[in-house]
Length: 89
Image (cartoon, rainbow, N blue to C red; front, side, top):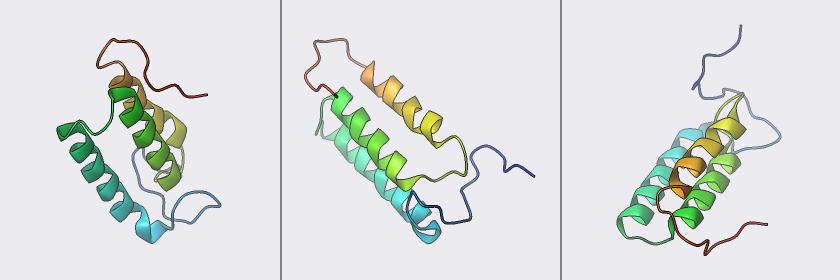
């Protein structure tokens, strides 16, 4: 039976944090992102890149982690039209 979308993975994989660290690491990431946003720590595109990177490192779901991690990146990076100040690649 396939797990429902959004279900946290229950087994360790060769990527991602240990299963017992997923919830803690997700909470820390969300708290960090709230702080970054409130204090304008990073430009929107850098914030989105950092969020994407950390979410990908956590790898919280058994499937769909790439799609899930890219979703906030697309939304954050389009918040403010301007010349790119932070380039990836």
